[in-house]
Length: 202
Image (cartoon, rainbow, N blue to C red; front, side, top):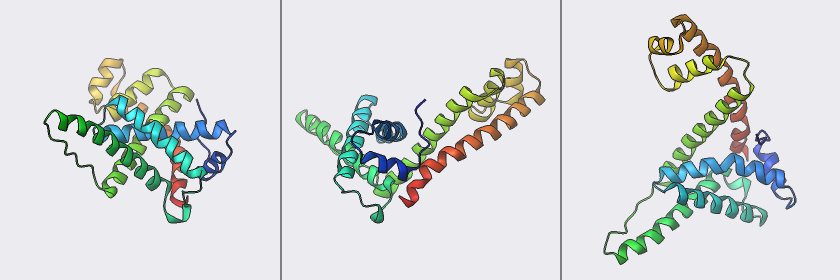
């Protein structure tokens, strides 16, 4: 697993060093999944969203190293959202030309900047949850059945009685599995969020 737990400030400082592959890898690992999910929510295919993510991260890296990103003028999130939104619009412009050629409407309206920022934050939370679950599974000493019970009840909203029956557990064991796993997961999420929340002062 790639270490993503450097603060955003430390990570950005590392990006200035062209030979610092670790900083680039960590930045890519941290933000690529968010950009992909963001672009998908704006209607792009998985392939187009992956292309947008690649272009967004590369453009940011170039502009950052050229000194175009001014921390005093805005958050990192706003900069990345702006680039990603522009890249998504570019995909739609290209597709619009093809639709016009076929005599179809080429009109596509993207969400406002504020709506895009809200969408970005939603996808960021989703990515953090996914990372936290990965870490939980990799590091927990709990039985697989305990984690499964938590996922079924807390994440899939399956009734406790059904989970207990499916996993051959008592209702009390399911409740206990949910409580203990949720506590461990919250601790991981809080730690991961600190690495992203550094954006607020970046």
